[in-house]
Amino acid sequence: MQQIIYTNPLGKSVVFKRAPPYVFENLRGVSSVEAQPITTESAGQDGKTFHQLTLSDREISLTAHVEGINIPDMYRRRQELCAVMNSALHRNGSMGMIEYINDDGSYIIPAIVKLGPDPNDRKNRFNHISLRWYCPNPYFRSKDPVVVRLAYLGSGFKFPLVIPEDEGVQFGLIGYHAAAILGGDSETPVEIRITGPAYNPKIINVLTGEFIRVKRTLVFGDELNISTGKGEKRVKITRANGVVEDAFGYIDLASTFFQLSPGENPLEYETEDNTTKSTITITAYARFGGV
Image 1 (cartoon, one colour):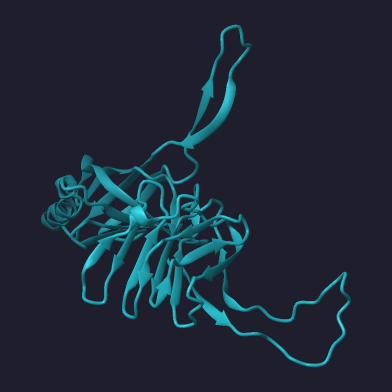
Image 2 (image 1 turned 90 degrees about the vertical axis):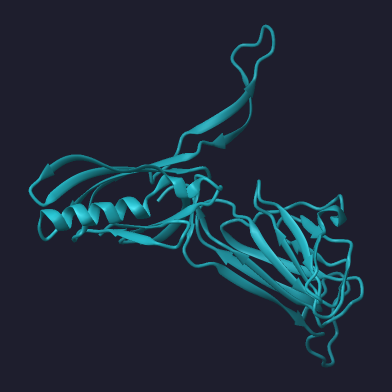
């Protein structure tokens, strides 16, 4: 069974399902989107040279009908739907949220109302309508995030043992380690939160070798927040006294705003003062190119 739940920027929601008053009929635009290849062409070249591609934005359309207990109730329900799906609510850049539910799961995607309820046929207390949403980011994501806390691991076990020099055996790790296990089918950005104390904190994606290092000192009560989303990159420090500091300019130039891949992603944390008092939390959502 399919459902659409739309929540507007004011937090007001409407549900389209196989029951009144807003009855789900047909949905388009939730599967794969068109890819845009980026190519170059040289003089005399047969064909083109392919470099990379980007995914197009997404448009989701829904046909449904408004059902009332009588004709006046149908009009009242339709007006309430128009109020929730008012495109003018996006004038300041605010986004709404679509939640798409099917028999396999629940997925969300930020959206704006491109076309509010458009009545096209009325029969007694039933009014067929069409609606369209525009999604600038084509990816659906899981409704619930994966939240990982990097824990400090001590020195492991101690007991008499002879270890071959050419092989070696590792029984324990020292430092902050964790693994984020993600579903989905696409790379996804991360939100990183580090609380002090820390000196030049560094998060490492062990799978790729990429890292993010911020050359700042955090004292107890300070909080560093990093977002690696493309077009949404952010690095800020909230000091213990409430002062917010833009720390983007303190990023190590060798850093990468890395993404996590579907599957297991081992992560490590380092700080140059070797403290064991830091708290590190990684948050990510599984992302889907279509559902």
